[in-house]
Image 1 (cartoon, rainbow, N blue to C red):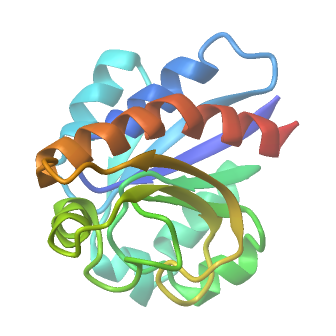
Image 2: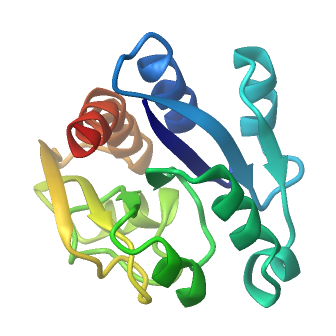
Length: 187
């Protein structure tokens, strides 16, 4: 049975979707959720779903080996960033090479990089009058949103779409595709 650790920073809808998808799986299970936000809604979701969840600060994550040692003890087969906003430290990436993936709410390489997340991306899509957008699932490297692509899914953006409309379309793509892609990676 493969082991998944999820990193999230906010509401945790993607984390919850992954946890539920793998609850009755023969392939893998989500064994832990880690967050940099002690007030993140993902912590409540994990409590309800009976999945171990911990929060950590920047020192534990990137200035010491605390989070690295926790991951080493947990031995995940895959680390999944699901709405996690901090840049992943290189020393953790080296320890878990090709085992850290991220989901991004745009078609990379467009609309990636520092500060490009959530509604910032959706607003930029609408402001630039894009006719399509989508999601990108990619490996994580030392630069924001520049790791090798694993999967993309597209959706149309109409001239009348607001950033909230785009966010809903992206959320639908995430819910549909993210668990399946994670599952395929682990098989």
